[in-house]
Image (cartoon, rainbow, N blue to C red; front, side):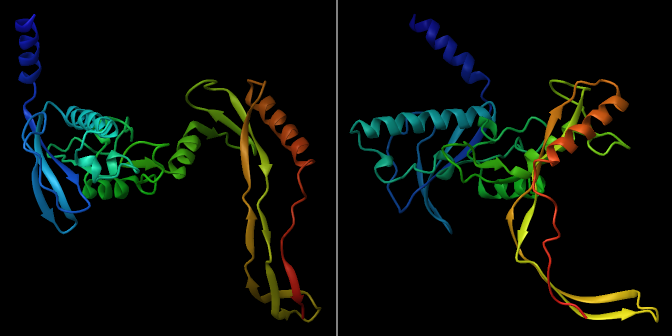
Amino acid sequence: MYIKNQANELNTLKHRDKSYTVKLRLPYFLPAPKYSGFDHRWNPRMDEEGAFWEKIIIAHSRADAVSRILKWGHSARVKNRRGVKNVFDHVSVDKGFDDIIEVSDDYNEVFLADGFKCSSSKFRLLPKHKIEQLIREGSGEIAVNDKYPKKLGSVMFTRLRENNRKRAEYEKVEGAKYLFKKTSGPNMNKYFASVPVKRNVTQGTKVRVVSVERESNGHIISRKLDVTKGKKVQNGHNRKVLLKSTNPVKAAKEARMLVEEIEKTLPKRTSGFKKEFHQ
């Protein structure tokens, strides 16, 4: 049994041919333990951001390295809760391991592409410069994760990304005002109506007419306005409703009738302008 287990361990280690630098951020300088449990021992270090421990992990990929250090972290934290004194007497994990542990990306395995998943081991425990790079590449679709423990990872997708994904999922049918065609997922190639749920509501908008230029017969040519923008108190949004019709002409008619029925139940559209003076 011992020989079999030793052979399995050697076969596993044989494929681990990459080295990754791991940093454990500390609130203040602490001496490193003599034994670290696996791979190289921890070494105390200091930089412009403060104190940290550093060690080298041998793994076959960044995902493997992150999985190994997370396994160590969870194990050490459980032992600490049971009364064993270790580094977690001094380090808080209230914001998650992504807030205190960094794993280097020396082989450029982390980049934004199809299949990017924030909670995947490969994309966790990112250094700050890698987080900044992803945020730049994301063009507003990626931000620093501030929703732990609801979301895991160093970064998270923003609402903009979800909205862009939904926009790509539905294709506007040209010539039909409320009609969309689904391009992927369930109900693919079926028609949907964009139905209003809430209208945009703005209060406090004021318009003052400063001057008016008229023709000789009194018709207005142009007006100079002084507009004070109000405050939006309600954001409008629509939802997609699956239609029964599979023919685009019939679907367009069905969508128009459905939207007209829904709009009867919504407040009437108003300009939101309050005229203070008119010349």
